[in-house]
Amino acid sequence: MNERLDILKKARDRMIEDRDTHAKVLAAPFDRDNAERARNKFVELQMLIDALDRAISAEMPVSA
Figure 1 (cartoon, rainbow, N blue to C red):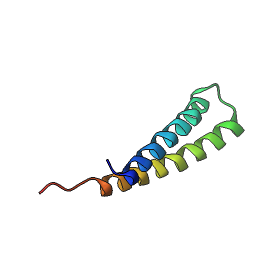
Figure 2 (tube, rainbow, N blue to C red):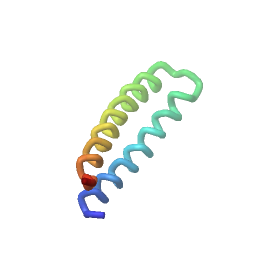
Figure 3 (cartoon, rainbow, N blue to C red):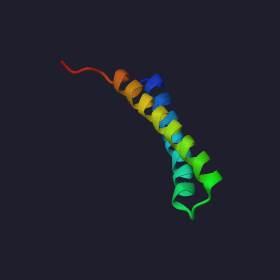
């Protein structure tokens, strides 16, 4: 595995951990301020995870 791919995968894992933290806030008893911030951050992180998934796919070798 090349270094770039390894870095992307580590970044993705880290963002999933961060996203999970915000999901826990969303699953907790409702608090409007906390839920709104957590929801916005969750969506932002999910978009970043999707972008990392695309970058990882672009780094994968293409089989002929």
